Image (cartoon, rainbow, N blue to C red; front, top):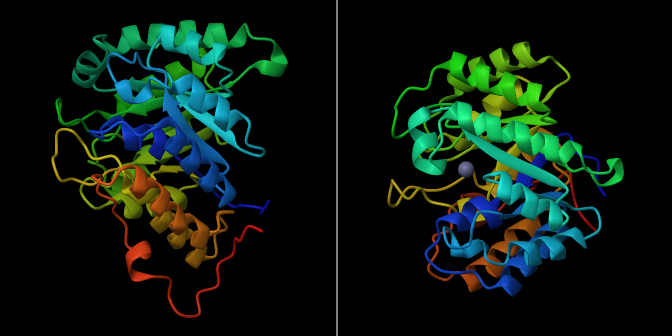
Length: 313
Ligand code: ZN
């Protein structure tokens, strides 16, 4: 295993697949997860414990998680939308849970039919449930502040509202906080300002992570801005999979391959073998021939003389 300066968490099997039209067969999901883990990606968000009747893509959540749990050195992450999902995730052996809480009231009502305050109450119950697990089995709990940089329903999201939600989630027992640009509204100055504010409020040692979408083309710029103010954990999706249902044709998350290339070329070790990572695109594309995959480095190729810092055996 390579030492790494940043943690890149692949969220494609969850965020990327959430809005795809076609079901990705369970075997293809497992092959994707295995191949990316073999390329040195040590954290992968593998599924969502949302009711299958809402998002049929995740009907096989427990099966996919079981596969990921058996991969040595991999920390699988699961998304949990509510208390019931939390119970299911724990029963399935989840080791790291991401619970999204929309800072925007309009987004919260539309997504989970709860006010932000009600969603935080739910988070408190989930945190209590997680804490009641035996210490050896207790999973990590990440509170994700969704729409932290703006909302397609509400528009501007006040930074003080983000601070309030982040503090409430830490208070409830979150092990880490993520600031998510759910709809791709963020710009680099805003990213620096908000991460600095949240870090000041939560303390230097508290883990604050970044989740950016590339909807308006600023994904990498925002990731770099976050890195410059001390963020070391980034979500991204292979091939930028995961378009926004409200913005047809818009790209999805930050592209994992391009993010790895940016960091490795800057001298920041990702622990990820970029050549192997680029090859994983074929696995995904074969299973989702209709999906649009984005990204530059996979199309342009690595620069002549490029020396990757991270290579797997
Ligand atoms: Zn997202």
